[in-house]
Length: 347
Ligand SMILES: [Zn+2]
Image 1 (cartoon, helix red, strand yellow):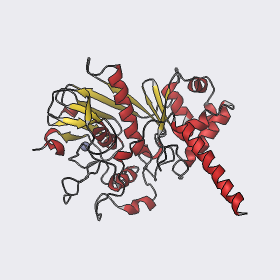
Image 2 (cartoon, protein in one colour):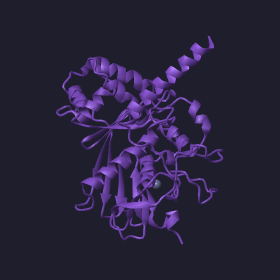
Image 3 (tube, protein in one colour):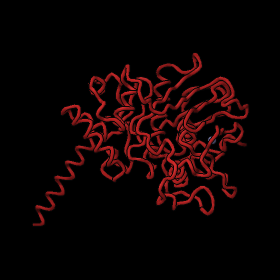
Image 4 (cartoon, rainbow, N blue to C red):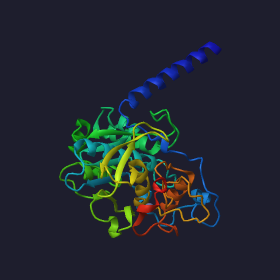
């Protein structure tokens, strides 16, 4: 009896290992070095209340049911060539990827599809089901079934509890085939907003759009800001007096390399750090406002972020609260990061 059980487990391990390998080859790198949920604030009557996870949503915000988003990125002329734009797009998708898997109160599959220009970022497990090459209806149903199971702790293909996106070209045969079909039977589900986002001539029910603008004027009209985010709408980031960088390898303390902006600016900002923070505003989070925090608190939504910030339990709880429009602390107006307050740049 024992040998056969052991053999079965060994076979299972081989199968799981194999499927992980197949999936992982297409996945974008997961930002494991930006994930630190063990870190959280003491809480009380303020904005981070863990009991929120058990409470029904009274007044759903858009993120409560948002399987598809479009991201429109714009740059001033001459600030970001094609190679630069690829890096920015990837960094943005990686940042969205961390947020999308942390809302337990949202419908399954929050931002499972993020469309950026000609690239469609699709949850890796959903993509595997979607491309099984049976009939289109069966593929879509299998993808839907997978989407409903996201977050159940099944293998993600990354060796991590969180999954990642596959980056597919909009011209991928799987997606063009999807677009050639009558999808009216999927009313109320993600194929409709996905079709509106990626298929020509299908303008009905456009999904929410995040406008990400690199600008050569003060972000959100405030001279003091180098970046800002407005709930449900836009992110703006200064390029004239700010140098944006990325770590050359994952991990706190790694060297960073220039990506875009002003290469000689003294204000040096990590692109993942600022994207995580500003995407948080897009999703309806304000700043962590508790006054008793240490300045070095690493929460993404702390109002004085540093380049090594990471996603804490505080941020996750705020996201889950933000799924309800009724949350008293939900951001309603643009909030900005003040140029002089980036911790690492202080003397
Ligand atoms: Zn902010």
